[in-house]
Image (cartoon, rainbow, N blue to C red; front, top):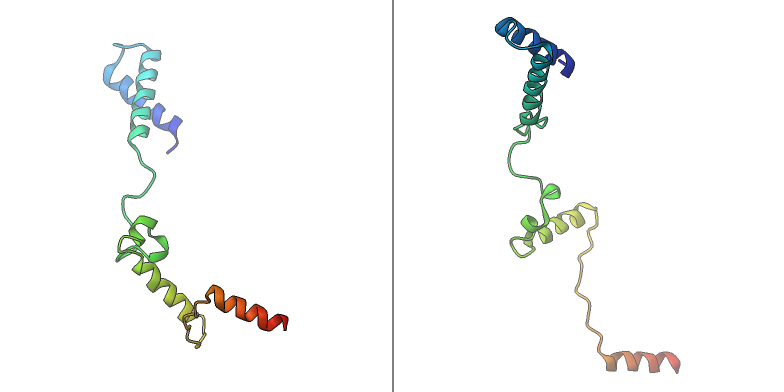
Length: 110
């Protein structure tokens, strides 16, 4: 029911209950105030969720996802990489030192 209909219904109810004790303007203002009060307390968001179980990882807040030191993020990343269809194993790269770089540069120039 829209706002103006609610105000009218409350106005007529107040008029029936109070009769001629208050004027039309006062009754109308009282009806409007009651509707405003109801609208203030009304929340348009449901007070429940249809989802069952814990919050999906992709919907977690960052501080919650990282609360265990990042292991949930690491696990999720591994799931994404493994589901990409790649059977390759990732090998850690060999660290290249400055002397290795100089040797490779010398070998490339000669």
